[in-house]
Image (cartoon, rainbow, N blue to C red; front, side, top):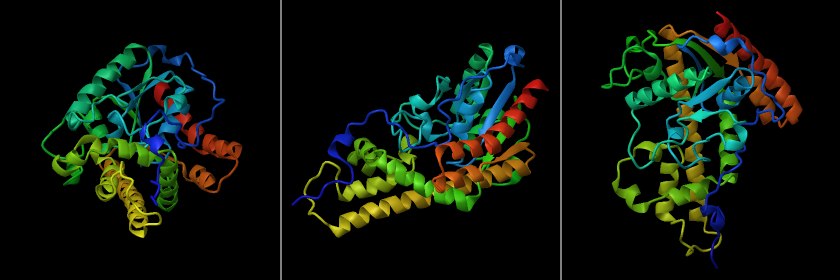
Length: 334
């Protein structure tokens, strides 16, 4: 008797998914672009910061519904093609026609995208966005990329967050507006655990199985997309239970245990990533970055409580979108 895999065989053939997250997007939202942006200063830059799972992608779409904008991804893992579920890329269907840049644009096998490379690519994209009369909106949780992009100097020899605080610069190349989407850590931790479960249901393991290369897993250094949370955890599982294998006995407790351990590690490593991200945001604030904090905790609590979609949307609009729009409007009009 053979044991079925924790994913269907057909799921190894990956197609565009409909992602279960983010949950805050309002399908009926119509674009309400004002005329005020026709003479935007060429150095205006809006940046959405926050830990993974805090709702940055949702908010960026809501902002783009009110201001003519284009979105530039600054999430390290989302730069690369592939693993769309694992890296939580916003699906095309949820982008509402808003142009997205540097999202799945890089070859995952071509090596690491350095902070300097990101700065160069993103700077060119920003120039193009501005030339079209739109507001560039940088969205992502990779604070080292954001620091590299917006600060005047860039020393490629070290990570500014690894060492003395004075390495973090507050001398900016752009006129920046920083929106920090914050969620209480205990609430966010619970939400991220749920999100991992939803990602598994959305086909994450099948996607990782298709990505798995036994030879590369044994010999190649871990760079680029292979650093994404989920890849190393399931590589360990696939080494013991190859995704193409069918030789396992039904009810094998060792195999079930190995699968559950991989999932547990993904959740734990996601929580640890969140802590590091919040630590870096704290350092940015201490170095003098003026981060406008927007509290999305109540909106996430509503998701966890399985509130009706209309109720969730009301909380998100009132507590996250409306204050954010006021901040952006003030920034543009100054």
